[in-house]
Length: 332
Image (cartoon, rainbow, N blue to C red):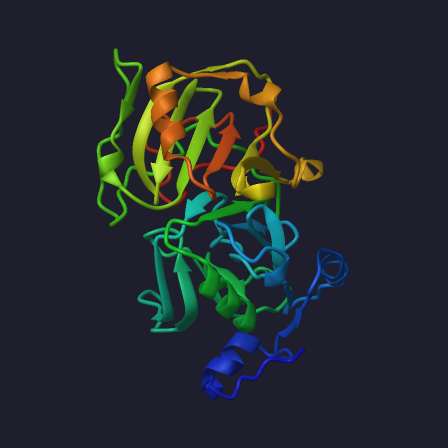
């Protein structure tokens, strides 16, 4: 289905098209139809099926290796699109991010006031999701370019603090960093002191960010758990993790039958078979936390809460401020 561009200035339309035919979008009314259409995507094309999961929290997963973005709502795929990520020298960072800012008519402050329609900011130094050129290969300055129509649809269903997972590499395999992967900045981009644990078993400061979606990072290397709400750290605890799996996993809290909460996996590369599977109680029992911290976190859980389980560190060694936390499978 060809979407109308008559409201878009001609210069912007040309910039977004990057010399190719205007992006094609299609709508699907069932999961089966969605899957069939998704298998045939070409550069600039996208599929949107919001009726498959009408409500619930949204998670966006960007696969740099395949140059695809998939949208999940309540743990169910409702959209998939081709993308164009950062070109060599301007690679899009991998990690699990939260949406920090939304601006439908944003213009770049770094690149000659260039239009960035339906911008959704992921980092304070310039990485975002937005409508842009789609030549069929990585060509951005670090942002994730989406088709104009898809970008508009996605903008309409996301909220500040929503989770965006970026994984893979468009050019080569990426290794996990050994430095800290939690950016030491608050929700306004101001530096903050890291919340280190000394003799205390845990800290819990929910007043730092009273509302918004939560992300929980379980670092098996540091044996710590960090809780972020709307991208701001509100809690940290020691943890005992009985698990030697070197991979990373992302799990989101959804609404099951009758509205009951249900944890389900989002399939990262190398773990595609996990997608949509419920979290087994045996896996939960591998993580042991101080009772006080566990009760505080449990009371704060809401549909859309995301858990990242990783070998990457969450210490205080600095690291790159671009990436909130890494989602790349470590290599020996």
